[in-house]
Length: 128
Image 1: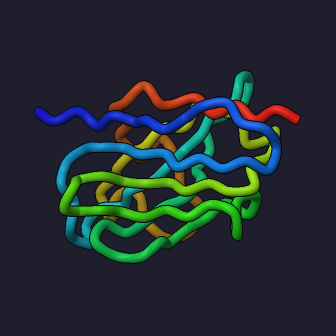
Image 2: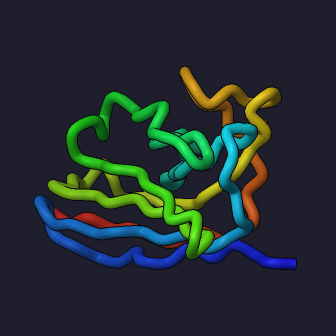
């Protein structure tokens, strides 16, 4: 069984950039939502960006619009999150997840409890 693995996190200064990767199963049809979520210490896990498997991005949190870009390479079974102009409030553990479209809905506010998270996440720390 393939286990998705997140990577690409690190420590950057304000304004820096990072690209996160998550390797997992092959999702190519619109029956799944794939997403990046983050959780900072003492806070609830929140959805950052969602993409319809094999399709286009369907959701970005307001706080990341214009700065983050979610994409999928179905050939490599990899989900990406490109982040630019990082801010201290972006510091968190970032993890990827998948959900069946009928269960989670790829559009609108994503509910973490409806997603399956298989990796430990990757830490992003942004210093001012």
